[in-house]
Image 1 (tube, rainbow, N blue to C red):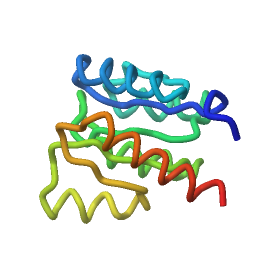
Image 2 (cartoon, helix red, strand yellow):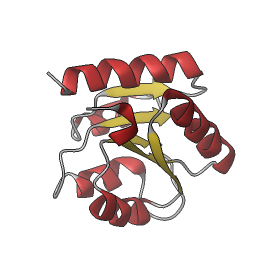
Image 3 (cartoon, rainbow, N blue to C red):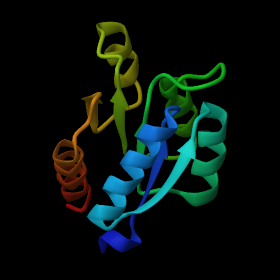
Image 4 (cartoon, rainbow, N blue to C red):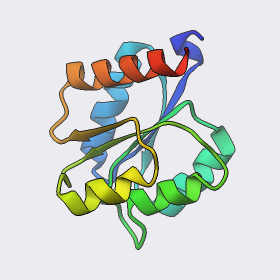
Length: 127
């Protein structure tokens, strides 16, 4: 599958980081659906656009965190998820495992780290 055909959904409550990740993805040739800051909105958008990958922050605006949002998304989709978070403590890592994530990246995320993670995981998925 061509990169341009792949859509990556970004769920990040820091709008500056959201724009940064969106620019990273565009530079890599992926379509990006961003500026999602609430878990509930992320669930609705995932249903609507059926993304190829989700970049998910764990700490989100509102009453639902990224892991809870992914658990809801798992009820209708097996879309791959890469967590991008400042929460690397064992509690969050263990909770995230319930969603069968592809990668768990700790902020700040540099372009090459994100590129390698996405490319490694898309390569795995296409086999």
